Length: 66
Image (cartoon, rainbow, N blue to C red; front, side):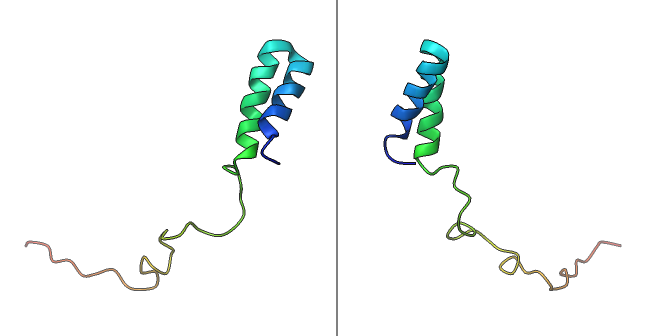
């Protein structure tokens, strides 16, 4: 959505649910407008992947006291 998503959500919420609907619509529009719910792209920059954590290598031997 655009940068006006929170205002559109607030207006629709107000029309459908009055003042409380306006508050909820504004909050929902704010969440939709700031791409925080975006599922596009891969892992975040710097996030460890399976290969970076050493997948495929055997576990190191540990010595136990007798």
